[in-house]
Structures are given as structure tokens and as C-alpha cells.
Image 1 (cartoon, rainbow, N blue to C red):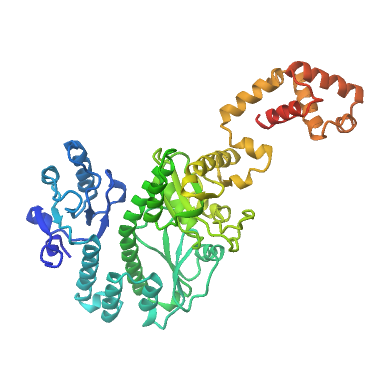
Image 2: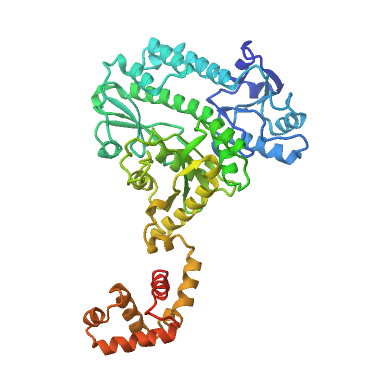
Length: 518
């Protein structure tokens, strides 16, 4: 299909605003929808870009428009299809920018939905394939035609796989994510746990094809045929292309969901957000107005926040009973609001408390995510339950603290910490910034914190053992092979240097915390 073919479809009622013949003759490889001001990282060559122009407002300077259009030109986009519904018409500044950057521009009237355009493109594209010489393809013509119709009709991936393999006797085949999530499977394929699926992918048995067009390492898709002899390689590659088209279609639809998630997270980060606005934002994300909710933050070594969002979303998809909205907070941190039901059995995670909430067991899947990119530290922090949308801001603060604790526990690795896990003083202190912990330890321990002399190191050891033995002089002396009088002398020396009284519980706690903060 080519760009000019769109103008021949009367049902779409598109208008050409600018485009030279060579541009209109470009072949269309797919469709993507975006309203990001800088969509560069989500674009692929040959795609039609659909935009409702939400990113633009009257009075915006030309530079902002040029950045958007230049991103399309650099990515090799086939054309920009701009919606008229938001502003009533396509602004002249966008037409001028498209002319300057040589990007074909078509106007989409308010009565034409982006979905209608997407379906028309994919139906036409697969129709074009079905009209080519049969010898060029391994899939039968009737199968290709049916698959094209199913793609246009939003068929589920299970149905696509079932139809694609039916003429081969319905062999066992599964569509798996990089972390072992079973996205779809044929009826003959047995159910797999995430761990079993990962082992299957790593085993090298059968045949595995990576689906083209996946956006990153954490949510890559793989088509896995259990028995390599069940389908000819050419057939399997063509079916993989069908799955790629399905995924591309899904990605276009998810653009709106992402906008809704970002809007919800912006409200969650606002202390003064109104309850009505929060309820509306929750509804736009497909989440209930009433909780309980949990907020989860993820960080990928403070870089690539979009990949951190994808990693977090992939982890949460392993718990289909917990709907979520994932996106970015205003400060660029990847975050998700998860609706957790009550009264259901937990998904293999830790006990979530008296409410017995259905909480995604992120701790189980997180190592698999890290294996997708082991050189990049990946951490997550989960809040406690938030009863209503109005409690999301407090839950966000909890998740930030839990994320800090996760980073402290494994700075160069990966891990998940929930505020439910902060049940000891050491765990609680792990969420305090390293600089604050160091300052506290230095202030409380005084000269002992520096440990510059053998005498100070000896006193620190005595303090640690004394506190570990709950202030028992006799047990401390026994462990250190000292006389009890020597222990008394050392403790007195510690009290003099630190200004603390080790007969007082609060001072013991201060010194214990200072030791934990070293």
C-alpha cells in the first residue's frame, strides 16, 4: 500500500494538505499514533504517523512544530495524518513545517477515527499480499486473507495463532515474552509457568523466532514452536509477520492509554489534587474509583525512563488480576498505579497483610527482567495499600522510600522492596539517602566513626557485640575473650567518646542505628 492509496478511500475522507508525488508514492509499512512532542524513539521507517495534535497549542512557536516534524522526517515516516478534531483544522504552521521538511501531510476530519485508518491500512496491506503470486508465499492464499480480516477486526492473538496453524494440523506453538509470560498459544500447546517458558526459550529446542518491531529488551516477544518439524521455516516466518502486525496495531491503541496513565500520575504527584479529578483520571485508565491501590516506582540506573516503564509494565502483566496504569511521573520516574482486589488468593508473593490483597509478586519476576539486560541496575519500590484515589500521593511517597531502600540493598544489581518489607530498623534505614545515613553515623559515633586507630576499631567491635548481646556484660566478655572489668572499661570509654549512656534504651537505639548506617 502507498500513501496516495489512502486518498482514494472515500470512507476515510482524507484531504491532502501538502505532498509531492514521490512522497505520495512511498510504501506504507505500518501505522503509529502519537501525541508526544518528541516522538522520535517510537517511530519506524515507512510508517504513517497519526496525531491528534494535542501536543500543539495556538501561540506555540514554529520551533516546537519543527521539532515534531523533523523527528518524523529523520525516522523516514511515510506521511503525517493530522486530526482536525482538537483544533477544528490543521494549523498552517504545521503545513509550512511539513513542506520545509518534505513530509507529506494529510488532514483527518473529526468524523474519521484513527482506528478506521489503522484497520484500512492493515486490511489493504494484507490484501495486497494476497494478490501477489501464490508461489511467493508459504501460507495459503485463503489463510492470508482470513488473517488479514482478523487483524482488521481486532482478533485476539490466540485466535490468530489458532487460524494460522490450523492448516498444519494445529501444532503446539506459543507466543512468549522475554520474561516467560504466555501471551497466546494454540490449543495444542500446554500451559507453561513463566519459569518453564523461560527455560523453553533458553533450551534451544524447537524453533524460536523473535517478533520484529519490539521496543526493547524487557518486553520482546518470541514465537516458539515446540517441535521444529511441525511447520516449514517459511510458514513460521510469515506467521511471525502476522504477529508483528498485531503487535504494531496494539502499540498504536496503547498510545491513548499511556496518555491517560501520565495524566493520572501527574495528579497523584499533586498534593492538592481534587478527588473528582482523580476519580475521572482513574476511570480514564480503566481503574476503579475505590481502591485499594498500590503505587510502584521503577528505576533503570536513573537512565532510559521509557525502558523502565516498559520493564515495570511487563512485570505487572504477569498478574492479570491486577489492572494497572503505567507511565511517567512529572519528574521522569517510571511509575504505575495498580488496582489490587481483596479476598483473593495472592499470586505467589509475600503475605500482603490482613486484607489479603491480590498483589503482583514483583519479587519473583524481577530477576527475569534483570536477566534481559544484566548490565543495567533495575530496581522497584512498592507502596502500602491506598484506600482511595485521594491516598495516592501518600502512597507515592512510600513507594519513593521503598525504591531508595531497594537501591541501597543492591546498588549494582536488581531488586524490589515494598514498604511491607520494612519491618526492621535496618530495613527502614536502608531507604534513607546514603549521604544522610553517613552524616548521622558520623555525628552519633563521633571519633569512633573514623576508626583511624586500632583503639577505636577495638571499641567499635566491643560496642557491636555489646549491643548484639542486649547489653550483657558477661556474654560480651565471653565472646571477646575478655575479663568483665575490661568490658566495663571499654563501654565507659565509648560513652565518653560518643556522649551516650548505654544504660538508656534510647541511647542504645541511637548507637545501634548509627552502626547500621555506616
